[in-house]
Length: 267
Ligand SMILES: NC(=O)c1ccc[n+]([C@@H]2O[C@H](COP(=O)([O-])OP(=O)(O)OC[C@H]3O[C@@H](n4cnc5c(N)ncnc54)[C@H](O)[C@@H]3O)[C@@H](O)[C@H]2O)c1
Image 1 (cartoon, rainbow, N blue to C red):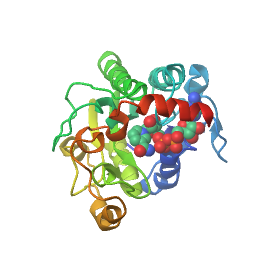
Image 2 (spheres, rainbow, N blue to C red):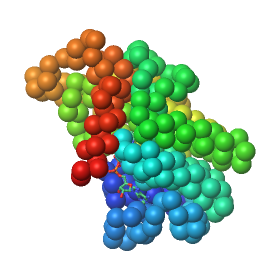
Image 3 (cartoon, rainbow, N blue to C red):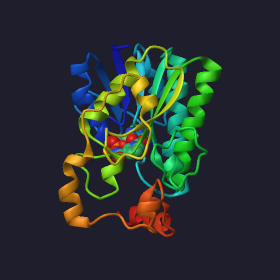
């Protein structure tokens, strides 16, 4: 399916990749954010009336708006949980049949890291942020089952211009692959409800890309091309640390949540 796509969070890192990259894949992007972007809508993604109006006449909704790291429960539950409900409910009210949701590895971040992990493992969030992504996937499942929407949840690893830490050598989602993955989620015929890992074709990858490839995703990048520089700067991950042992890396550490909330409060 190509056509008009409403992208929430269009001013953000991934939103910017999508508004620049999706048109070349045949999509017309209508964006929405609280931060102004020329040619796109300024609106709050938790405002059901505003998002429903923005979704009218579109063919799909890609929901990227939200807080992209740990924060207080009040902030996360409003921006991320209410925001996901609004995205799905606005799509339903506007007759939009496909929704792509930005989930995260932190939905299962406390899980021990294993190779070729599947997306159907028990949820084990590592933060309030991770809880919001478990809830996102649950809301997506409800709207697929109850209303017949196609809902594709992208369980994104580390979407960055380039890998920075040794963990990123396993979790990186490159800019080109970010656009390719969303394009696949928009164009796969009748995906129903799907949860897929969002990472590049990393040599050191931990997560099984079979379900993403089934949508048509064909990663073009591999973090290994950056491995020598990253390892030279940081060394290899150390067994016994959360960075090495847990899906969520530092988010799974005992002090991460408190530190992250405090840092955001001071920002
Ligand atoms: N970048 C990653 O590595 C990564 C990994 C996993 C999941 N994700 C998810 O992908 C999505 C996009 O991530 P990103 O890296 O582009 O984050 P980002 O912070 O760069 O962008 C988020 C955008 O959402 C907007 N926003 C926040 N609250 C809003 C609201 N109430 N109404 C309208 N706009 C609002 C912000 O202004 C911002 O432009 C997020 O949901 C994030 O949790 C990102």
